[in-house]
Amino acid sequence: MKLKITMIKSSLFFLLFLCTTLNAQSKMDDILGNWMAVDKSVKVQVYKEGGTFKAKVIWYDVKLGSGKPMHASVDSRNPNPKLRSRKIIGMQVLDGLHFNAATKRWENGKIYDASSGRTWDSYAEIRADGELIVRGYWKWQWIGKTLHFERY
Image (cartoon, rainbow, N blue to C red; front, side):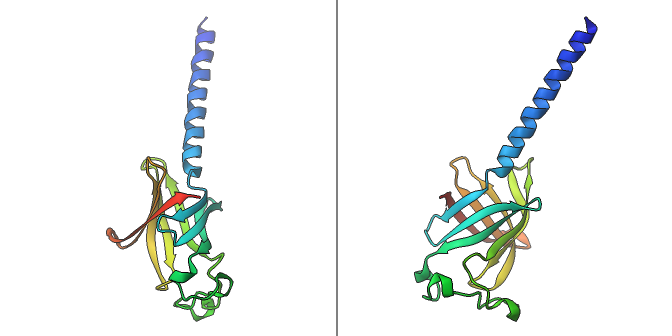
């Protein structure tokens, strides 16, 4: 009888652990996919690579940039002269995000702003209404800029 109770307790513990792990995994991957900025200026694809989350530009409003067609626009303000000829389309702009299950945020990332050529620390979170918030900041989280995205 004691063996049956022990097995049942072990099975319940395993199922609880499995459900918790699967829930954390689904939360972690909620950020994956295509996201359009609320102001319709840029669309990015968030993907996972090597255990971190990254994002690349897949579309942007050419009226807001240099006016060049998307396929011809390059990263001309990059501080590294060797990177100034890389195309904006397909360019990785967010790197190194790690999911923190305790805060339900993706943290410790870097975001690159091609319009200024600057790289900022960043974090991302998905609000209850489904909006993706990406914050780029300098040293302290209250010194920076927040971008708002909707799933596309």
